[in-house]
Length: 219
Image (cartoon, rainbow, N blue to C red; front, side, top):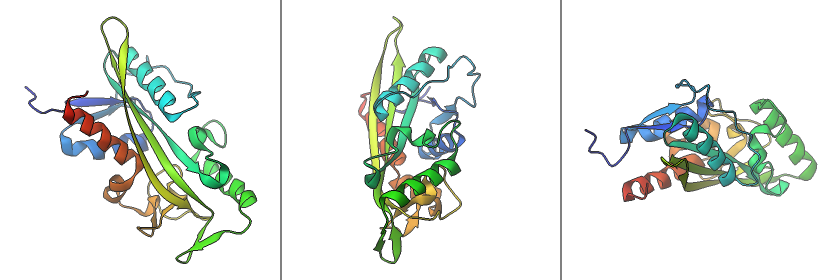
């Protein structure tokens, strides 16, 4: 019998290995097993077109599709980077900024090209060249299906402020991590240890907000 306020396991509606690993490391201290669509016989879970205009809309759409297909609650996230010099782009289009299929290297290259046009004279911050301020945003959606075919959604959000630098740094992480520099730490997301990243990342903050909802009995 599980006397913990937390579930034994949570299905993360993603096939992204990097995201699944981040969720595992964040939820492991709570004794929660994380299963992704890579771990399940999830061929019945349809590929979801992320055509929502907000992170919340996309996260809910992915969570709902997985939960209804698997017959159990599913947690999805939609996240991306919002760059001020590009009026918030790539935003919800972060994963496919350079087109399909999604490719981190091509996305990063396009981001730098766009910023080179918009920011002809980069700024300097403590000896670091800065192209723009930016923030990573993450919205989590847990969809809980009901027996009548409906369901309900619980949301949690997190953000992390930083800046974009003109050259990638670091070997870790994924996505835009090599270009996202955190001045307070003097490192890009790719240069952080997993523990350091979990403490400040948008996904870590969103997940802690989600855990508080678990703890409070809201979920």
